[in-house]
Length: 134
Image (cartoon, rainbow, N blue to C red; front, side, top):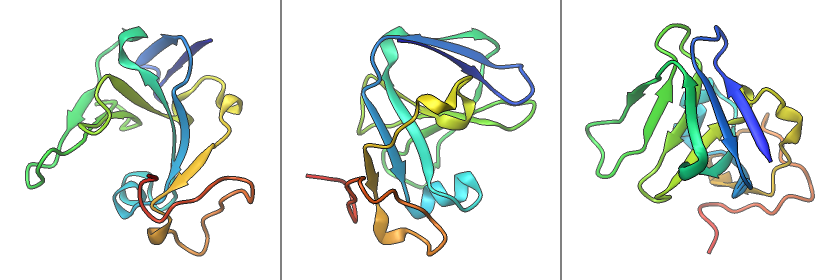
């Protein structure tokens, strides 16, 4: 599968070729901050076949946390592109909204539902976990 995407203003573009490792909804409170209140919907892809083809994102990691994730965003328009997490080495987490074709997304799991808000939607056939599964 070939996936292309980028930010709202077009300054950042990326490409990926290969299989999607995971398709998830995260309802944790941190993701709600990042999305403006909704769950974070994302695909995980192997970092080895992911690359930026135009521009370079800025990154942010919370200095007050042990092993924080690094969140990447466009320095021009602010679009959240993705995340690298210490708990998922070798993976790039891409925000579904940045995909050129977001219709490829079908969530296979919803995580951190203990933080879910009443206005969040989890499809009835998607396994849900109050934290991380397993």
